[in-house]
Length: 155
Image (tube, rainbow, N blue to C red; front, side, top):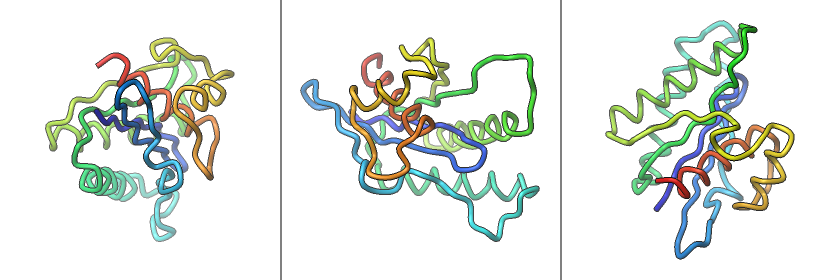
């Protein structure tokens, strides 16, 4: 089974393609593309253009990995503080959800507690559970890895 884990970071969303065969978890894109940086032609305030671009990128990922069975999104934690960054992250999650709906791929949104980790332990657990990426290994990437791992463990 193969799961796409997604973290909708407002500046550069991250994604992990994780598979499981016989209890062995593999981060399939560990040395490849993991960071979705919008083209420079999309300005800071062009939210609609950025979402359209991200939507197309998610479809590209699905085309590259047609056997993705499910998408797990590591969503924002619930707080009363509303920021532009949090709104953009939610918009990114929405673009992924729409792409999933158009492809008939199940999708779930999880927070730290529901994927068995915490912000302070995300990198450590992601690496121990599945492995790390060759570049851009940070908390956001680890969130995508942990979400995908959770989706495989709890189908």
